[in-house]
Image (cartoon, one colour):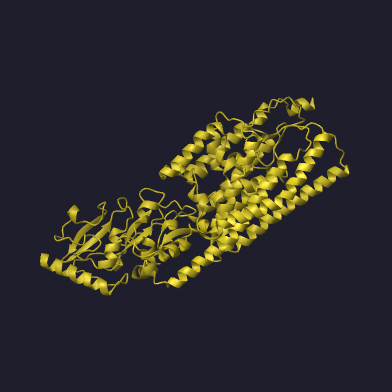
Length: 425
Length: 196
């Protein structure tokens, strides 16, 4: 028996050398005499289709409810409760996928890759919050997005950051959005999902890096309210832009502002625009000159950004699998007796010609070259606009929430002493 | 603020704001329509193609879940019920017993059961399986290839971007329609199609 076994192994080893084809029926299926019944291969079903539709329904209902709570009921408690419920449903029950933030990448990939099939849920998660924002401001951020909800819970001692720091840090989401679109469009990676901080908490399971990132955000979130939403979230860039055109936006006061200054320090996100007193003609002339200078500088920023980012296109493309494979094929084969990488093993077993790998890789690098120019120009433009915005001082009479950065969390509303009834009487 | 309705400045502002709002709405709608052409009514799920798989072992380590949602699946219809199973025993095994030193599986997730001489049935204990693919490699090299790695959809959390997919060296992961969520190979696939 032992001898047979050894012999069998030897024969098999020899056979493999000849037949390295996978899934050969080397041993015919036995004919059983003992009445043995072959078990079925279990194939557990995936999540029911109906539940995916339920996600869209829950999203729409939650947005409708929170918009009503923000605009009609003006209730901080209501917003808080909705945010907790959303955190439980979209966060802990649905475990964070699919989310509106990550959907940016699916939408991008669907536009650039003709073979990519995008599920309807993803489109719904991307579009529905945008439409609600266009009508009612960033109510999605207030209490439907589980990311916002979890950070809102920990913002215990929020500090003011000041206009300049806010503006500088506020540049990061644009860069993050641009990079994630670049990487999604080239089919390289979904970086928003890869560096998603809170999904590990929602699943009670993640890599150390993920937990570290989440820990940093939550601990710093005690003092800097909603760090991810304000200084990272790429979807926030879109919401910020769209919310500026919102049809109805929450107001701090239900009636006329009495400028009592009570709400001044209430916003943890520095999203309240202070009243700007009447125009000062002297200031205006200097500011105007500065503004014209910056506007003239914008094309320079755009070109500088585009050029300097395009210098980095090969580095950026290095993450791409095709480029990486081509690079490792180009390297000398004798790497000190180290076993070949899995990528090379897989490439060899796939039977693809080497020239195809190189042509694919150079096509990807070409895409990155164009993409990095666009990315750089975009960042330069945003930088110029942000700089110019610091100089535009528009006259404004009242304390109003900044339509772009306000999350409609309704904290400030509780500080306002004006009630609609008082005004009527 | 007391601004009469017929104040031309306010009207102009309103007009511009409405125009901007409408153009943003058209933009969102256009984007949605553009990608809507690429959609399908149902959902898609991640699955790995065993024909492309090289059993590198990253399925076991790169899934967001611990243990991985990728498990070894036994396609019984392809199995030869060998006594000397390339998926069960280490290559240098001399005595074909269920001793731990003989087993290829690091977690003892394959159960070997005598059926009739000389045939043995192998069953995967899925809660123990970590999806390392060692047995899959052994079975593919020495046997019929009836052991195959598959994402188990009752475990998978359906990440938007599968974290195994992005580190898979063989590019074996792809999204498949949710109504046909398994990509078991060849004779296994035929059997499943016949059942349906």
